[in-house]
Length: 186
Image (cartoon, rainbow, N blue to C red):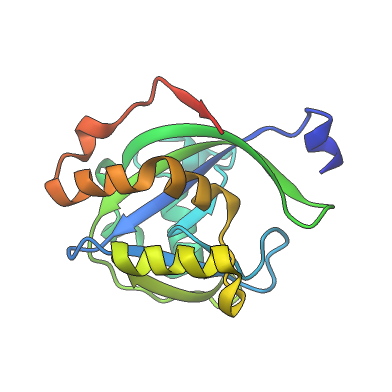
């Protein structure tokens, strides 16, 4: 957090929002061993692109790597051209006082039925949720019920974009919702 507050730790990130054919959003609860934000509920997958050859070519992407590492979803089930970048947001969030995030986060959406094999070192739990179930999860987090906590980046997306974008998911019009020119400072 010291480097973040000093303005020296901005980095790129991505957040994947994977919906199934019933238009339910796949959420994960981060494992207890995560350095930042352990045991919080968040979107399908979040991470950082690496500076290596395999992630600099068009046929491969960091999202595929992390979806496999965390959820066991093989790259063949996640064609790169099916990821739809909807927007970017800039945010800063402390985790435990020592660690935190300061990210330019690319928000990637996909509608696809996939086979899951979660890695327990990365993920404590997974759930597909419809809008009503997500609203109940938000209510529990706001009330502090059942120890439910949400990642700050996921909460920012939910509060600012998700429900409107969910309409586009259901209507098959995600491309029309994309705005990659704006960086939303949240």
